[in-house]
Amino acid sequence: MVQQSISIIRVPFGLGAGRPGSENGPDSMMKFGLVKKLEGLGYDVRADYNIRLPEGIKSPPGSKMKHIEEVLAIAALLGEAVYESVEDGHIPLVLGGDHSIAMGSLAGLNRHYSNMGVIWVDAHSDLNTELTSPSGNMHGISLAVGLGLSHIKLKQIAEGAVPLKAENCVIIGARDLDRDEKAMIRSSGMTCYTMHEIDRLGIEKVVQEALRIAGNGTDGVHLSFDIDSVDPIEAPGTGTPVRGGLSYREAHLLLELMSESGRITSADFVEVNPLLDRNNQTSKLAVEFIGSLFGSRIL
Ligand SMILES: NC(=[NH2+])NCCC[C@H](N)C(=O)O
Ligand SMILES: [Mn+2]
Ligand SMILES: [Mn+2]
Image (cartoon, rainbow, N blue to C red; front, side, top):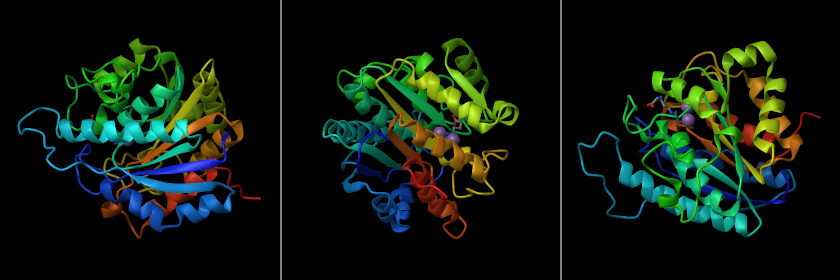
């Protein structure tokens, strides 16, 4: 990380997911010592943003994509908060909430950075569009929105935001891709390290390559970390778990390497669902992982 002050942005919003609970993620991560952990690592921590849905926003029933108005309202408010905090010189740390909120992070950051790279750590690719989504859940389209592949554009969320360049985007940890998402990955020119590549190359090589690709010629690198990238044995508290994910150590090493690189300029931690968790294992794990991203080490 390049700066010394972190702005925690809580987004207690879960309507982009198919099942409730991720709206409790931010409070749960805060409860399990996130601020203390970051302060212990030497950061000045502020947690003054809490992004809530304004009253009266409700999508009309019957549309294919569910809760689209709510998702867009949250994204606009989050975009403002992220932009403000990065302009003020803080590192934005966005706590979800479901992964649809990443649209807001990407849009807001895009107003500050002129050419941003993105590393998307996820069991999924979130590259459906409103035309291809099998579920109608908005958390499955957020990266597509970032890349300008959806009808929803970043510039409707934050004025002046331009789409990400696919060649600066990298997915790590994918193992559950819908048919049209696979085609999208192939045709878009982005890089996707599925679990297969992680098995073959090792997580260290994959992360070094990802940092090189997302960092090449870019003026910022955003990490969007979906906790379902991690194996459900370690992270059961999430709405769309998929077996065969990152091990506990692989996830830590990934974040330690990102920290060491000094290239990550903002992050989302999303899809922690305390309602589905076992003894708060997943919330506690997320706090540990955020620690690794911000410099916590074994020795
Ligand atoms: N952020 C997530 N957990 N996304 C899960 C997406 C699952 C599936 N691909 C869909 O479009 O509905
Ligand atoms: Mn996701
Ligand atoms: Mn996911």
